[in-house]
Image 1: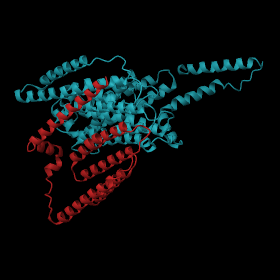
Image 2: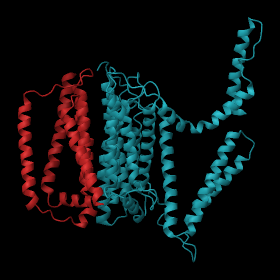
Image 3: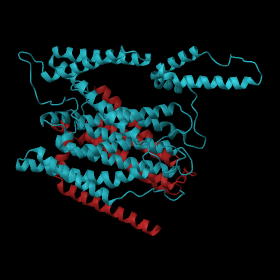
Image 4: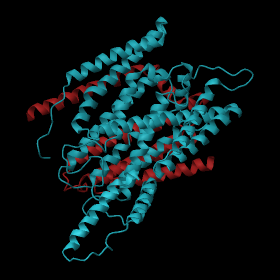
Length: 173
Length: 434
C-alpha cells in the first residue's frame, strides 16, 4: 500500500506541476484555464492520498467546479470569438521572476528547516473516519466567530453583486 | 403481418412508379422491383436486429473516420468535452450502493463526492461549444451553462433537505437512517424530492432544451452535422447521467435497497424467511407466467420473441429471489436489496422519460425562470422549514410525521407565492445580436 501511495503521490505531483507550467506557458487563455483545472484536480488527488476527503471534495467543488468555471466564463465573455489568444506578458516578466525566486527560496528554506524540526502529530483515528463531522465541529465550535463573519461577508458580496447587476441593467434600459 | 403494412404500401408505390415509368416504353421489366417475400424477410430481420442498433452504431462510429471540426475551431476542447461528461457521469457510479452488499466504495463524503463531481459536468457543456465559432454561439453556451448552474443549485438544495434528516453523507448511512426512522425520506420531504426531480430533469436534459436560436437544435449538443463517435459519447453521457440521478434519488429519497415496509418484520415460524420477502419473488414469477402465456397467442413473431425472452429473464430473477431466501442472511439481503434498488431506479428512469417525451421542447427562458425564480427560492424555504420541523419534533416530542407535514404545507405555500410573483414572460425572444 505504501508503494502504491508513493507512486500515486508522484503521479499527482508531476501532473500538478506539469499542468501548472503548461498553464503559464499556453497562449490561448482557454487552454490555460483547462490546465488550471487540471492542476486543481491533481492537487485534489494529493488530498485524497492524505486521507483528507473533505478537503479533496471542497477542492473539486469550490475551485475546480466553482471558481475555475467563473474564470472560464470570464474568458468567454472577454474574448470575442475571433481572438482567443493573449499577448505574452512583457514588462511584468521581471517582477514575476523576482517574486517566483523569493517564493522558491522560502519553500526551500521551509523544507530545510522543517526536515529536522517539524513533527506532525499522528492523525486520530476518529477524525480520519469521520472527516466531515470533524470539519463541521471545528467550524461550529472553536471557529464560530470567523465562520459567522465570513458568512456575513459573503452575504454582503452577494447583495452587492445583485445591486450592481440591476443598476447596470437600468442603465441599458 | 400487421407491422408490415407500411412495407406493403411502399412496395405498392414502387411498383406503381415502375409501372408508370415503363408504361411509355411499353415493356415491363420487373427486375427493379424486388420480390415481396424477399423484402419482407429483410425488413423483419432488420426490425429484430434493431435492438442491437446502439451497440453496433458505436462500433461503426469508432471505425468511421472522425471528421475534425473546421481548422480554426479549438479541436482539443471540442473532442475532450463529451469524454469529460461521460467519465464524470461514470465516476459517480463508484459510490452508489446497489443493495447492502454491492457498493464499490463507501466514502464518508458520499453524496458530497457525487455533487462535487457533477459540478464538473459544466466543463463539458462549455468546452463543447467553445470550439465552434458560429455567430451567436457565445450567448448560447452562456445560456446553457447558466441554466445548468441554476438546476444544479436547485437539485443540490433539494438533496440537502434530506441530508438534514439523515445526518450523514455516506450513502450507506443515508439508507440506514431511513431504515432506522421507519420512513423513506420522500415522505418527510416531498418538496425536496420534487425540487430534485425538476432540477435533475432540466440539468440532465440540457441537450433537449431549445435555445431561442434554432439553427442549432440544442445548446448542449456539440455535434451538429454528422453522427460520429463524439455523438455516441455524448449520448452515452446523457444516459449515464440519467441513471446516476435515478441512483441518487433512489438512495436519498426512495429508501435505496429497502423494500416497502422495511421495518415491518414478520417471519415464518421456525425459519428466518420473512413473509414480505416472498412476495417479490412470487410477483416476478407471476409476470413470467403472464409473459409466457401471452407469447402463445397468435401474433407477430417479434412480439413473441420479446415476450419469451422477458419471461425467461423473469424466471431467472424469480429463481434468484426465491432461492436466496434459503441462503445465508447476508446473501438474502444482498439479492433482495439489489432487486429493490433496480426496481426503484427503473421506475425513476421511466418517470424521467415520461416527462421528457411528454414535454420535448422546453424553452430555455422557461427553464431559467423555473430554476432561478421558483426552484431555488423554494428549495431554500424547504431547507428552513425542514430544519424547523426537525427541531420542533426534537424539542416538543411531536411525531416527525406531523411536523414535516406542516413544513411541507408551508413550503408549498411559499412556492406558490414565488410562482405567482414571477409570471411567465410571454415569448421572451431577446433582441437579435450578440
